Image (cartoon, rainbow, N blue to C red; front, side, top):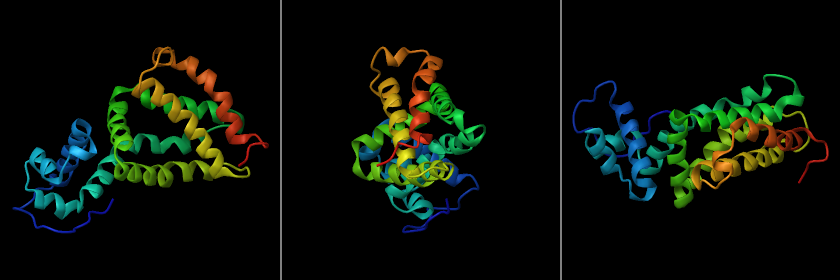
Length: 203
């Protein structure tokens, strides 16, 4: 993402890693405080820079959030390639396995959980996440589908996966919260396959 200079000037000379340090601090602040309670000032303080420097690199809090979650969301952006990497009959299984693998790994799960928690409690954060998901994931998944209504199908598949993720990792409802991941893949893959390839699926 290209840095946006909106307002404020750097408090002093910036080293080459200042922007990355601000982004790292932003991810930690949004994760710990949520979107509403995080401010540009608190991000600057956590990064050890003046708030004006945060504005200098990123602009508004919304723009800082967008830049921060794009990094957190990066592992999920490989899903279209994973889905396309084989025969069409296995697309549903590949989609389920790819997404569950991301969420079963604490290193990739925790940043995503922070994004989801911010999005479900704040409309601005939800709009930023919605734009990112639509642009970098759903549109690209739809582009891999050689069937009618690809956007609708991609959204149905996403709804199925997001529902499982919410129950398993956010609200932690049993028995799905502790179910074996391979068992979940086996259960959900046929439904995803139908959404993605069945000729009868449509709005």
